[in-house]
Image (cartoon, rainbow, N blue to C red; front, side):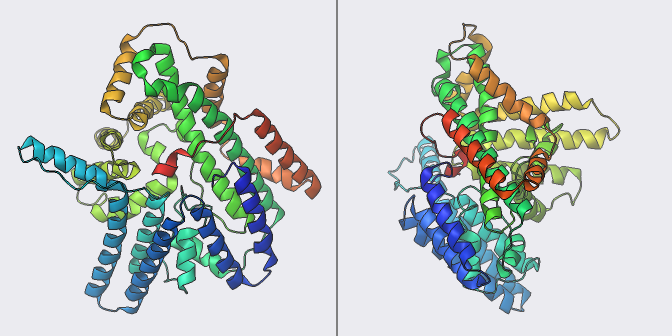
Length: 467
């Protein structure tokens, strides 16, 4: 069930009406939201609802055992058990085929080729997000950063809540569980903020991301050898806009939908293409994931303790594993390695020249094009396609065939969005909150109708659904 569809619109209207119909009965509200979330997930494949429930039950039980155990050794064993089970679930569904293929290649290189059991395993939508959420809950309970959930239902709802279920943001238990314990409330400001985020997310997904994907990104990356430098370069820039608009649109709609139900999600994007260093980029891009990697991978590895070189090692490992998290392919590992190496270079440079600085515009241009190079690896099907793209970008001096004024306008406007005031959306929401409710509803309805009239036919799945 995709956000920008009539099916989801009708689903959400029912959920919204029933949810607020419970009044102060917060227990009934939560159980209804849990059932609605399972219906939402079942729209893709109902079989995997049982995987989602099983994962929630396991994380609830392990966290409860950790909370009841006083022995530090047993607590460590329990959290290790829970994290291992979460990673095994993720590994089997997401990485089984990849690792079997790599093992087969390795055995063949030694002359020990064997017919390995290669199973066709369907990847459950959003498995990376709900397993990471389960891991963070267990670790935070173990660390004492969040109290154990009061009930199994709260843990199930934490992991299944439909706005963030399939593509984030990764909402921490310490952020969401306390909200589940309170009866949610609405205000005009919250409603207007939610409506602005939903409308803005719909526009970014259905106009910018969809148009750029179908008109230039997909054709060029499908066969890069058939296009010239201008088409290739524009496709790279277009993909940078597409993936930002696509993923930030999902986050915007998720945050907006949650707000209309009375729950607050953290911000997930903060104009990432205005970053002046790669470190700054990761403070702005998919912020819930970068913070998760910092807190549950980089810091446990040792973080910045142990000196400069160890911190660089830990940073590189974190980014390599962050790349692998995105997909079972070497191109994702290479994407993570590129970011890791550049982050290490930045850290070494700051250590060697702490007082050195270049103009902000230089940092912005260099950082953006490092990110752009990474996006080529990220989007390419394999290394062959990526190398063909890069070689053709330097050698195919032929006339453009796909670049049009519309594509150019979408790319320019998509990048120019990062020059807007950082909290422009909140400003629009404040203005709307001062209008009468009928006027606000009319403006939101008009915005949706305009977006519907402009956007192309059909809605492609969000890019991060496959992660």
